[in-house]
Length: 103
Image (cartoon, rainbow, N blue to C red; front, side, top):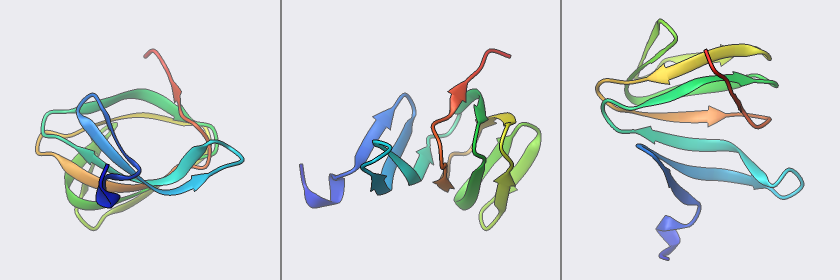
């Protein structure tokens, strides 16, 4: 694996790159996410909240449209899904693991 690929992972139609790995929690609390056009992330909960910054493209968090340059803070316990028709790149800070929910 080349140095530029370290910390890169693919999940369905999402690619993410770890910005910082927390050895104690065994996970990355800060990451870059890339969603391909037409992709989505299922309805989920953030027990400790989440911060999102849209670097490129646009996405819908529930029914809220976010475009490049937009920032969104979701408080602990906020439940939502994410989808994009055009594709997007996000910086995400997720202090604790998400819980996938059935809507």
